[in-house]
Length: 94
Image 1 (cartoon, helix red, strand yellow):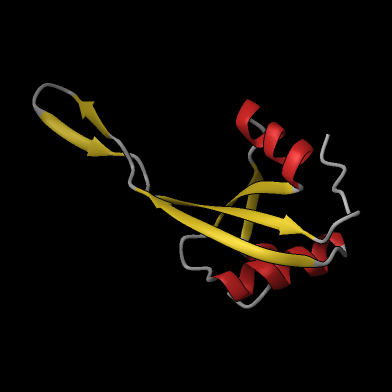
Image 2 (cartoon, helix red, strand yellow; image 1 turned 90 degrees about the vertical axis):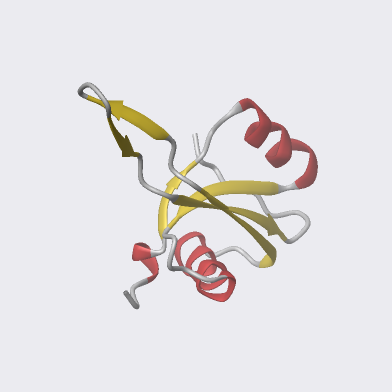
């Protein structure tokens, strides 16, 4: 898992994420749970060719979901990264 494309899974485009990008120049990504902040920073800089100032991460536990009668399953755990770009730089995601 040394490829930069393996660390970034998708962009999260919610109302809150859109406000962060417009006002604070922060972008939200769903990333691999095994990726650390340095790997995420490098991946964003290589893929989008932008300067990253800061990376904040948050781990989320998968929700319990009911299977059949009394069995419970679980959705997968996932990780979110909020990336702050240098002033004046923007990502065209849409």
